[in-house]
Length: 134
Image 1 (cartoon, rainbow, N blue to C red):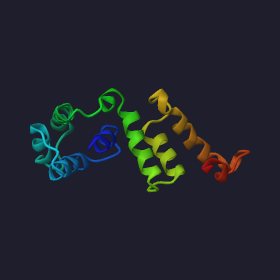
Image 2 (image 1 turned 90 degrees about the vertical axis):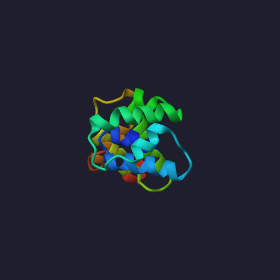
Image 3 (image 1 turned 180 degrees about the vertical axis):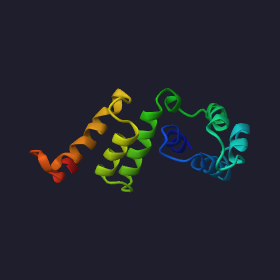
Image 4 (image 1 turned 120 degrees about the vertical axis):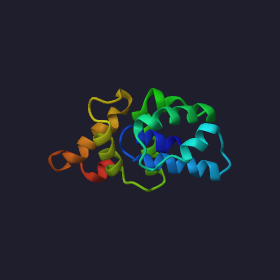
């Protein structure tokens, strides 16, 4: 649930992912009043409707507040989990950071944004893709 919310908050996932994650929680016997309401929302519901409901559900579930304090950091963590599971390459994770966080984003995420730049300029640099992958 937290990964879906974090990715949605930075615009990297649709609202339907959050609603689906809430439904998955209910199926997995994780329950709260706001979570049930969220699971029943339209897959195309407005951010203005979902935002307070998502915050309420996270509070009820005791989910880490980093999602609220730093959505970019939480979303990058979700992407890096996908990388660790082998679902993304290092280059794809770096490009994601460059696109959704950018150079003006969370300072703690900038090394990954810079890594995206390094992948973009590998043809002109003294390092190779293998060096970056390592």
